[in-house]
Image 1 (spheres, one colour):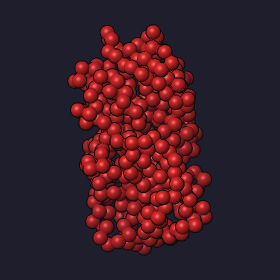
Image 2: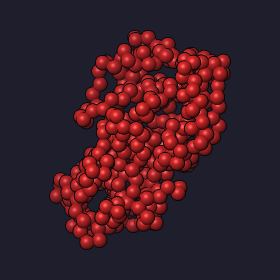
Image 3: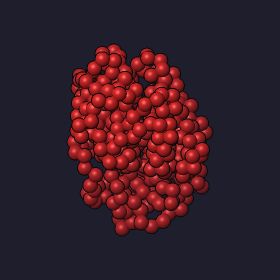
Image 4: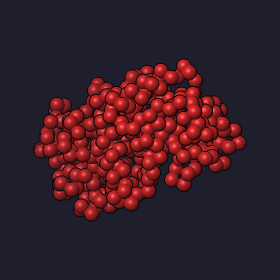
Length: 374
């Protein structure tokens, strides 16, 4: 049985950020992953957007971590030569009856201290994006895009330079509290004993918590998988910014939006529907819904829209639930000292990755279980 100080489960962008951060301060950091490479699920199947923090309730972890993570991520990308672009984002109202929601979104962003938000008239929207149809909009300059693969690769490299060990094909099968730490068993027969266990397993984080002995059902920590599809535009458009409709009123997703990649290619999505299958396949069954949604703010014909990709996010918010925040805490109060669970880390998880890693370090240092002081 291998003895380690810290064991991190999961090599999505959150797990890798935690490994890079903690390996600056602790020795014997080991990261395990059941897949054969990093970022095989949500971290590599998303819009690659650096969010601003306008959407989330004031003082929620999502709001606080997104706002700080935005600043940290731009700085990290610049320092480490990771391709990115601060495009800015235009959120549009396409009918007069959407104006109250637009004004409320602007107010919420201001309450979250998102800098530089501007209210735009119909003429202002047309001036910055001539192809976009809107009666008004808000512009958020701090939104952007980033190369997520190279971000994760850089975080992994940083962790390994700090002598962290990254191990793939390590599927966890059992976890037990043994002495002052946790015995973690794997499908390949390996066994580790660790003083600190960090559950950053993304789509499977509730299952890891269950294995550790936490009843996720009774603690409302059971995840709901929510699938999203993306379509791409085959012809070019002179779009320079990200363009979003107003978000879903239930808060399940941000609406079928227009994003750019670093090659200036356009894609639309994601939509959102709950699923119990880990299935990334895609067909054209949603195409008409996409066309209807997209054509509210830009004219796209059917021949110009083609299936692109899908992703699945891990949500604590079920189909009929209201907003659920990130769950990030050490489980002392449940009788599991040294176990830190990160559950329901969906959007804006990518943007928040570096600030989440800092928070985990502060929780370890404080021993208070959870911190909101960032």
